[in-house]
Structure formats: C-alpha cells, structure tokens
Image 1: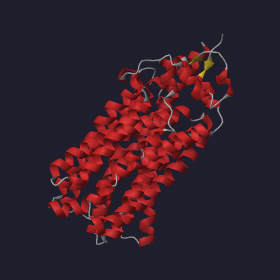
Image 2 (image 1 turned 180 degrees about the vertical axis):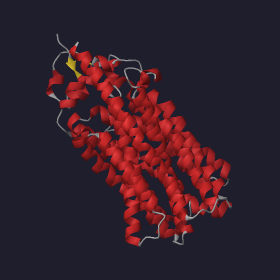
Image 3 (image 1 turned 180 degrees about the horizontal axis):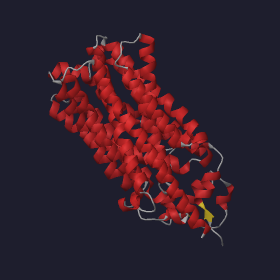
Image 4 (image 1 turned 60 degrees about the vertical axis):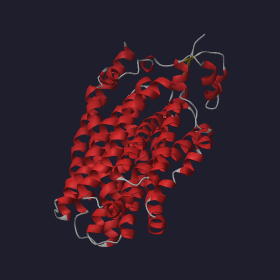
Length: 442
C-alpha cells in the first residue's frame, strides 16, 4: 500500500481550525516571551536609580538574560527535535515565567542577574520550537504570513511591557512588572490545549495513530489506512553537522551573521532607547512611549513582511527591511520633529524586531523537518551573541558621552552588514535548490 506523504498533505491543506489554534497558542506564548525580553529596558531607569548602577554596569546586568537565551537556544533547540517540540515549549515557558515572577522579590543586582539568566534559558528555548512547530503545520502558500503573524506576538509582548510600564512603574515600582508574570503561568494549561505535538516527530517515533488523529483535522486523506511517511529529506539525524551538509554551509553561516547583527540592533535599542531618550531631555513616560512605537513597528512590519514574502520571497523582503531599518536608526540621532521621530522609530522597529521575525521564517524554510529546531536553535544561539553585545555596546557608548547622532549611527551599521549576509544566503539557497532539483531528476 502506498504511503501518505505527510509534507505534501500539510503543504496542500486549507487553512482551518487546527492552524488557528496553533497560531493563537504560539502567539500567546510569544507575547509573554516578548514581555520578558523587553521588560529590562522598561525598568532600567528605575534600577539604575535604586541600585546606583553606572551605564556599563547596567549593560553587563542586561547580558545575564542574554547569556541565558543563547544557552537556552543551543540547548532546547536541538532537544525539540529529539523529545518533541510541545514538551520543550512547556518546559521553557514554565522556566522563564517562574524565574521572571521570582525576580520581583530580589534585593540585589547579583540575584537579579541569576534569575534573569534562568528566565533567558526559557526564552531562548521557546522561540525556535514555537517557530518550528508553526512552520511545520502551515500550508506552503501562506507559510511566511502565518509564521510572521504568530511571531508578531513577540512584538506585542514588548508593547505590553512598555504600556504596563507607563502605568505600573509610577504607582507600584519596578517589582510589579515582574510579579505580573504569575498571570500567564497560571494560564499555561489552557494555552497548551490548542497546541499539538510535531507530526513529523510522531511519525519518526512510529506513533502513527497519534499523527493520523492530528492530520485528520487537515485533510480527509489522512483517515485512510495507508501508512504515514516523510520525505527522504526529512528523515536525517538531528545533529549540528547536518546544518553544514547538502550545500547548506554558506547559508548556515550567513544566517548566523544575520541573526547576530539583527539581535544586536534589537537588544541595543530595546535596552537603551528609553534611557537614551531620557538623556536627550525626554520624560520617562515619553521615553517608554518610544519603546511602544518601536515594538508596534516590529509587529506591523512582521505581518506585512510575511505577506510580502509569500509574494516576492523571504530573502528580498529581508534585505529591504534591513536596509530601511539601518537608515531610520541612523536618522534617529538627528533633531527631528516629534511626529517624524515617532515615524522613524516605528520603521526602525519594522527593520529590527520585524526583520528578526522574518529571519526565523527564513531559517525554518531553509532546513528540512528533522533538523529544523536544531537549525533554528543554533541560528538563534549565534544571534544571542549579538544580543549580548548590543546592551554592552550601548552602555559603553553612553558612558563615552558621544553625540546622540554617533550613538545611533553605530547601532545602524550591523543592518548594512546584514544586507550583504542576506545576499550570500540567497546564493546558498539557489545552490541547495539546484541540488535538490538535480536529485529528483536523477
């Protein structure tokens, strides 16, 4: 009896209730993830006042969470390919929510940093598994749009952090921002109800009945008695070495460089934009509203970018976003009128946070099913090095008391480097597709 090609069935499926459940569940998870990531930039001015931190000390403290994110991506990304994406998502979400909640009780910078590292482990592991799961179930014709829509929850989380900060900080202090993490932790069982396990993982483990029950929600064809099979390309070993096989080396390295540069810009702006604007004479409330605009731009940019990518291709859109984002960040250092300043920050958010979301979609598209979480985890992990450098670079620039224009110009340079790296990725992807076409013809 001829088997049912799982990848073909998913690629050709119509958008339905299962897709909607996955998008909503993963988006809710990433809203909390984004909240946890951007919370430090929101509370940073208060922490610097209370603990009398210098700018370099504050930048180093931010790096605790980012070291955790790098470690979490490298640890839990490959683990998702081995034990299942849903299990990893549950573990990671519980870890970072609990650690964030406990951070509301600390009284010293050291303990604060330790718990931020623990929260970072969970954040770093959640993203690659959530993206891989969404990408796996999304129909091919709208894959980029759905992944970007789901991942826009990350930007929404940053908006929630900035919005809550405007209201909570003056009334209850910075601790209340962390104590709020108890709410999503209590809602975790409800969120997980809409999240299926990776169907590819179930098929590889021989759990045909569980996989068939999920696929029946996508197509009546899965109800037949034919065995479920994966394409030959999807049955490789989940190892780091696989990321450099089958003409993937150039693409893997160029994506790592893109992630490094993009996350450097995201975390430099996310950590230091409010403080930079306060130094320029704006009030705390106005400075946090700039952070809100940055994340709103990231959300809008990701959703629009996903739609553009389904039409024009991810690499072209990513290149355009990087170039536009770098230009707008450089222009932030000029003395602009308030409406122009908000517009520049909005577009900068699209070119940084929005582009980060599109990069995850690019990596998910580049790797086969069996190594997708591994590829996403390692790309994210390499990117976290940039995320670590970003806040530290911001602290050093602020301590050097450079003109505002030079600070933002320095933050824009990685965007230009990423344009070149994306061009190299396009070359690698064409090589890979040529090899796959040749293999099918043979």
